[in-house]
Image (cartoon, rainbow, N blue to C red; front, side, top):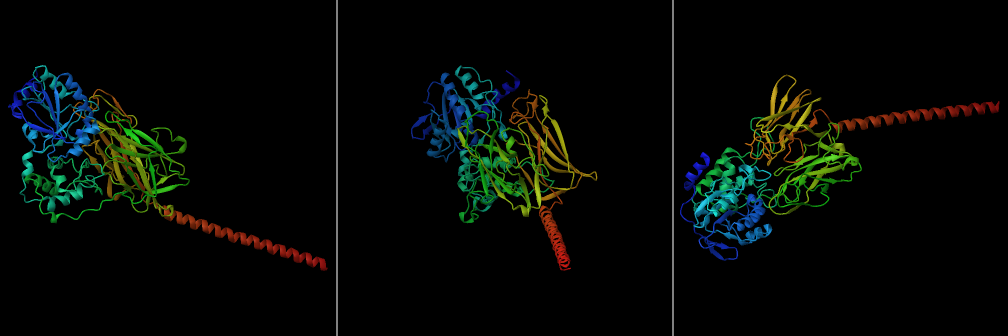
Amino acid sequence: MSIAVALVVALTPVFWPAAPIDVELSETSGKKIRLSTEAAGRPVVVVLLRVDCPLAGRYGPRLRELAGLLAKDRVALIVVNADPLAETGPTDAFIQSHQWPFPVYMDPDGAMVSALGASRSPQAFVLDAGRRVRYRGRIDDQYEAGGLARSQPTRNDLLEAAREVAAGRPVSIPLTPATGCVIDPPEQKHQTTSRITFSKDVAPLLQKHCAVCHRPGEAAPFSLLSFADAKRRAGTIAEVVSDGRMPPWHAAPGHLRLGNDRRLPDMARKTILEWVRQGCAEGDPADLPPPVEYPTGWKIGTPDAVYPMPTPFLVPASGLVEYQHFRVDPGLTKEAWVRAIEVRPGNRRVVHHCSVFLKPPSTAELIGENYEVGTLRSFNLVAWTPGMGPTVFPPGMAKRIPAGWVLEIVVHYTIVGTPQEDRTEVGVIFEDPDTVRKEVATKLLGDDHLAIPPHAPRHAVEKTWTAERDVLLLAMFPHMHLRGKSFRYEADYPDGSRETLLDVPAYDFNWQHRYELAEPKRLPAGTIVRCVAVYDNSKNNPANPDPDALVRTGWESTDEMFNGYLDIALADQDMAAESQTARLRIRGCLAVAAILLAVVFGLRIFRTSNRQKEALTLGTS
């Protein structure tokens, strides 16, 4: 046994009670059991979870599999809903959706949470036949803190511990870190006296900074519109707010001002944390802010056209899902201009992100081949990630869709533990071609020949693009995969100065953003835009699928990408004025042509008349 493991074993009694655990539990049907008599004489695995926790859902198939494996070793499995406000209906629906052959027990007074000192959902415990805790921690190591995930677990901690207990052997690793949603200690539920209240102080903050996602029908796994919603998740709120995970935002401050900055102000963060620390008082409901009328349909308004995936896609309950490509023909017989674009997932639980590309009809069937569009050679039409609003260009600006071209909708799906169906759609609002002043293009600084060495902790890649004319920078969108560590945009100006445009020091594949500038940034001709990405292909990156791999460019999350997107427009372009000038020129040319025709026609008439006079004169003479 290693020194580290021996130390953990020695300290294990500090982390859980040495006395036997005995708690009464009830099934959703009302049937009661006692932990001391259930599966008497055999070890028991107890898994505490909350059915509204996304990670608990992802472990649904694994727990169903574990139940069968544990039974072979004569180890019982007891699953407990650790939410004290849980209702039987959603709990039964959760059981049915995962097709579990075992019940889920309720813990309304938090007796099991208190007895085991549970703090995470899901969190597993192995109790021996005498009901003493021998293992506490995660089910396996597939999911890490902060949302990082491996494609497959490398160690099945719970199963190994249960088999060791069943065989009468010491548990080799008795304590592991559990991740997932926070389970609040029951005693905190009864604290009500506070200077800071939900109604007056916290509700406005959640409404402004959180409810855009944390409301019914949106990407977040639960709503935060009511006091009850917020109080039952107070521990989770405090944790993610304290460490800056929520609201999700990864741009470092101090550079260009961003119009869609999601950062929670320091005072708001302190208020929320103090509210939780003081016991989550509700306050006077009369102090609640007026409810916000959130849009129920398209955020861009009624689209001029909607382009759905041709057919729904079935997302499996588990495993890896390759990027899916869907071809859609918008049926455009003439060139179109788009000023607003919105990607609307059919199932927000499973759509990780989505990109929409444009292709000529003759090449539409070539998966993964991209084609550039327009004067500035735009790389794609739009990209979307959870929490991202629609893409709306500044007044007078629009993207071009050539006549006859088709859309390729590329979707990356994530599994949630149960089979799901999705049919994502794209809505657009067109712009009158006569009013378009500037053509918007998405430029890509990319690397199709990545070669990230095995075990490299800081592999840097750099790409540049030079502005041939003055351009306006509108937005930036960095994209990497699981080994992405940081991404930075810089501008080297013709005068020799350098400016950091965007710095993402802790890139997170789970949360990707299109960083929109509050005001367009003029980049003079000759400016060199430099993108620098750093990759971590070492074992210290918990999201790394395989530190031994030489990683190359590819579509799948286990491959890598270097994508530095830029939304730009020509600074001095005025297509509307150019069109007006062109029309005036055409009118002028037509007017001159008409005058010339009139002169020619008049001369012909004059000549004809003279000839007739001459003929008449000759005839009379």
